[in-house]
Amino acid sequence: MIDGAPMSKTSSGDRMEQSQGTSAERTEIQAEVESQLESAKELAKTVSVDEFKNGAWFVKILQHVNQAYDRNDRATYFHNKYLGLPPDEIADKLIPVATRYAVLREG
Image 1 (cartoon, one colour):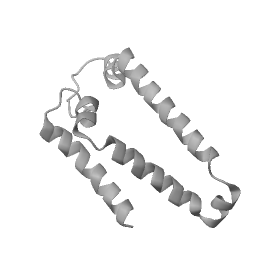
Image 2: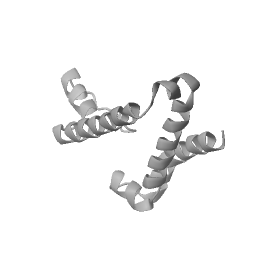
Image 3: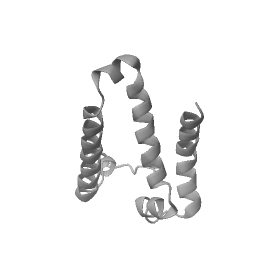
Image 4: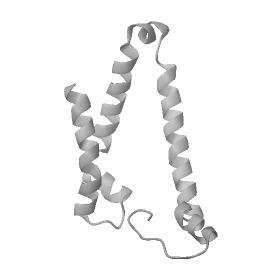
């Protein structure tokens, strides 16, 4: 089962292709991952040796995560990210994420 959709009984090659998505989807996901990796590298460059030694790097990363969450905490962002999904299904995906962020924020 992939993303809630049962797999049909086809050859293993067909199942592999179905699990990997279309070429455009793979390219989009790869671009997103590369962008996030580049962002993480840039953030890592801002951490000094002293911050790493005294643990301040962790606070810096949490601040970065919170800023990203605040920036993306808009209905239009998630509507565009999950195009085609009804609002209740989008909410089902976001509730666990919001819970994790709330726990991080409150410590």
